[in-house]
Length: 339
Image (cartoon, rainbow, N blue to C red; front, side, top):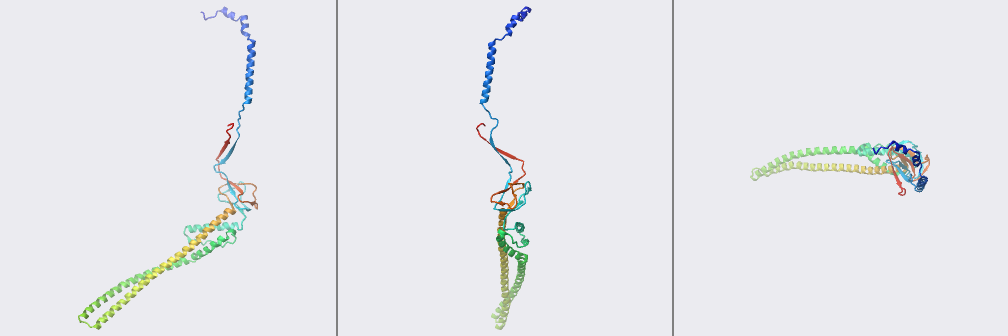
């Protein structure tokens, strides 16, 4: 077959002359190939050194919590006379962390504040008889003394009016008087009906006697007697009408007195509520100014070295309250250069 190589031809392929020609590569090709590879490698290294690619990009990151720590700020200048908080302490919402110096005794103001809250509860429930819960007249309220004196004056008036049953007793007496007057009015009305019937009978008798007199059956003397009887029947009827009018006037007077009593009580209540509201507002302002209070429930962190008798300034951050929080988010700012 033409595609098959003969043994002789295969032996000729492995002869020394053929092997010498095949096994010897041209020297120039080898030299130029190595040089070209080295040149390309140098160019690659130079280009790699010149072209820089940064794997670190500088920027600013602001890390925030969804429920970030809240600050407790001093709202007035003065000494920190009492410190209740410490680093890492758990605080409840509205818990007092410290006292700032005041001319008032803090414990007395807080006690008064609690009593005022109880009075507000009684007023909202319209339980005015329960407002007599002020244990004593407070004397060490400092900045609040004027507001308390105004409140205390109104308190004494309302409390006296209620606690000694002046209002309740007088109202009960007036209502009882009104019921008695209504009963008397009913009796007078029944008496009037009786006397009107009696007068009607006497009037008819007089008319009959008058007819007899015109017919000359009876004398003038007898007619005058009948007329006198008629007048005697009319007099008590007129007196009853006057009594009924007086009775109505008495009812109007009692109703007016009841209205005056209610008006007096309303005026006392209005003045008391004004003084109570004014004192409550002053108490809240005082507490915001002289108390350091936790705004939320969380862990207390001191803003620095905080100790008793330390001078605080207005706006100074004293504590941080870190609420329980496991969620955070960040804001990353990068320059467009190298981005």
